[in-house]
Length: 296
Image (cartoon, rainbow, N blue to C red; front, side, top):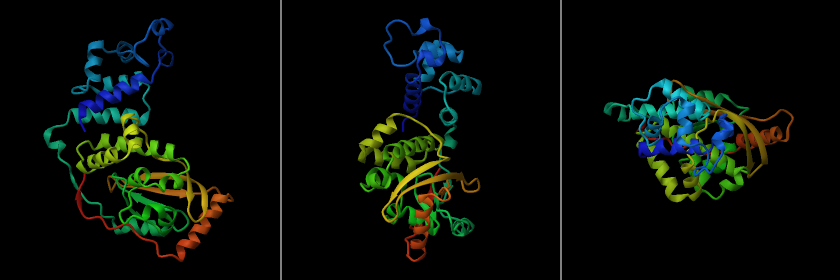
């Protein structure tokens, strides 16, 4: 991924979505013929308290030397949310990275035994562990049962399933929203790990094979995937509406643990109990053990 292009497209798309009215600019600023959607560059510069020339340099992809105060002012001017602001700072960090910082750090996808024991101890809630390449590297029995269509692949990957497997549209009743959220999360991962070849290869593969992915990737949206409601249509128990919570593991950078629960007394809770009974009597496939690999 070309870093200057990433910066240019991110800033220009954030500018294009913000109208003068939303930005709180005077009425006269919005008047007359506007050649661009959203704000003009000079309007962003005004909001951020920098010169037009300096903002133009930033939007052309050159964040080198930009101070935290400038980045904060730019984030406020463009009304970036928490995830977008973090992404802007990640882009700036990459622009100022030394050659040594551009080398990926050696890590492994191996799951520590204590993490697997934790997953197995969670018997009433599906739990899944993913890495920052969206591979499902571990799960408890109920997690494998819940995502059995994804675990049908020996190397389950939620991104490949969502964009490349036709079954995903049935499994995710809100497929449009699910794919938007997934790509926005992946965009954040790419900002944090811009020199990660394995992640870049995944983006390239999905861009080549999925028009939907290409369209969403070009939007440059960034989002955190921390909590929310997931609707699934399970092939065995039907429609389910589950609340998910996602936790990053500080001792295992790149790993995220996701858990799913149902509202007590709801049809989804009944479906989850049925799924647990099925999982207890079925030999469900576990993710294929990942070989040690270099990942940033």
